[in-house]
Length: 579
Ligand code: ADP
Ligand code: MG
Image (cartoon, rainbow, N blue to C red; front, side, top):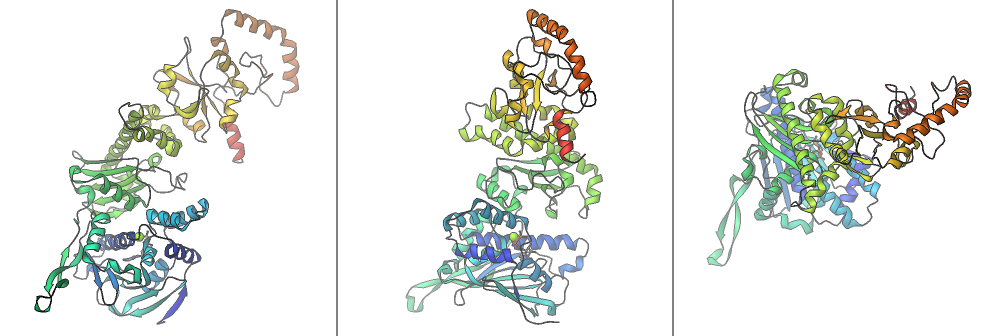
């Protein structure tokens, strides 16, 4: 087996390292949050693998993270006794960017062409770039690790100065787990302080559910009472609360802690729009802490992508992205669900079938809808702050199109969903019109909620089918999301009023006409009969029927779909998809 090996980083890693180390940094200290959260992830992974194979604990079942430093050597070391890494895992995981979040980050950087180093620095600080953030404060990082279950001789040492390549060699390491040793840059020496490290841990890592230990300090008098200093002892103490944030009572958790926790689980750099934290008791017992992000991820449209809810059972991490816990149309929700009833070794397959899971999913769905209803309520609340009132519009812009999928997917909540819908209309450029708003503005005698679907807002607005509505002053909802056509199939009425596409045949414009207009239309139809016959003959293979219509004002002709048939928009979409 090879001993020492020098290897190059994957191209993106080199790019990232350059950015991380060269950006001016407003927020250097986040490196500790990233490394502690990796240590905590490693312990979660061990716990999970140990469910199947208890021997992995190697008689040391108490999982913990130790943070220590050596002033003389100028090193800071973060040690965990979690899952550890094999030689190959160290090469694969530390030399490549596996995490999508990091890639998103790079995309965002190049996409927005961040130019100034300060902007880059802020972005990195907000985003978090995982392991590589160590190079913010270190000019060399040594990682020593042994994977749980492997022999002590199968340890690995990984060393890099963060400029382009890294070295790996085999070592013997008695303890399971990983030590990350940061050789601090000269200007980062202030991290060699118990007080400083403790305060950073309190800020970012308090809610980590396992203990973070540091050496106790004690005061040592100088020679002949000439001054003195704090010195490290051999005794370790826990410096964080070490209780899973969601398991604490609401009143003990601050807004900042909720937001920090969100950032940790979501890899998002912006605070969430809203969250909801509840302990549910009854037939099924569970705790939920659910967040609505303030912006959509790049892969929102991938329905295959699993959701953002982590499953714990009695505070033991079970799995990320447990899709059975949330309906697909709420895949943007992030958070944690901790069940008291599920077995620890529950698998994805079992989850799909479990009755407890169904109860949890229904409960969580209701919770999310309540959060959204509250945001929608705030929008109209005079007493709310501008910031609060803007939230629902923000939500709708980012996630509205996904929520519409729920009309088809979640029959039980369709009425609640319908109230949450917002549309642009012939009277509103912005998608802010609710169906209730529309109803309140309906004209005397108007019997339906009219809408039109099109590729773009401009196309919808300029459609000839809208002309008669415009002259009559009747509002028409303009729908331009790809999902609208499909979703509207499931929403045939709102609060007793039918939904009517103006692009479909049966819509009877005569309902909008007064007597004299009706008479004129009938006369016109009569006089156009010979022309119609000719047109029908000429278009015999291309049009099902040719009619005189009163729905046009300025345009000479338009195409309509027959009722129950595909609308033009849907036909166009299918054609695009090659059907
Ligand atoms: P992320 O944590 O989002 O996956 P990081 O850059 O922080 O991304 O870490 C990269 C990978 O390196 C991790 O996914 C994990 O496989 C591995 N790793 C990092 N730190 C540790 C650790 N302390 N113990 C075990 N594996 C680790
Ligand atoms: Mg990480």
